[in-house]
Length: 169
Image (cartoon, rainbow, N blue to C red; front, side):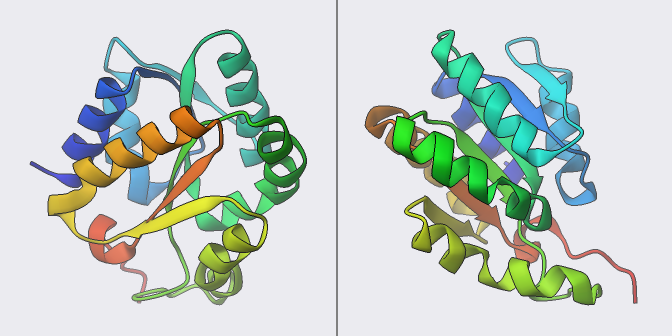
C-alpha cells in the first residue's frame, strides 16, 4: 500500500467527503485520486485560506473535509486558523506537503517550511509530521478521529522523505 492509498482509505473510513486543494506536485497523485473517487467532492482553490472558509461552511452543513496544500501555502491560513477554526471549534483535517527541509532547492520555501510545526504549536493547532509510509493510514485515521471528536483542526505534515523531494538541482 502506498502513502496515497493510506490517506484515501483513512479519509473514507472517517466519512471525509469535501476536499479543498491547491495544485502541488508532491500531492498530485493524492489529488488525482480524490478527484476521480466518487465519495469525494474535490474543489480547486485559488488561495489556501479560502479552503478554511470552504471547509468551515461544509462542516456547518454537515460534511467533513480535508485541505490539501503545501506548507508555504498553509502559511497564508494562519489568521483563518487562529481567528476562525480554533475559537469556533470547526474541525477539519489538513494534509500538507512540507517544504523547506531535506532535499529542498528553493530558498523561499525554507523559513516557513522548516518552522511550520512550531508555528502551528504556537497558535494551538495540533499537528504531526509523517515520514513513514507504513504508518500513514493509521496516523491519518487517528488525526481525523482527533479532529472530529474534539472539534478542532488537525494538520498532518508530509515530509519529502515520504512524498519524494522535487528534483530541481
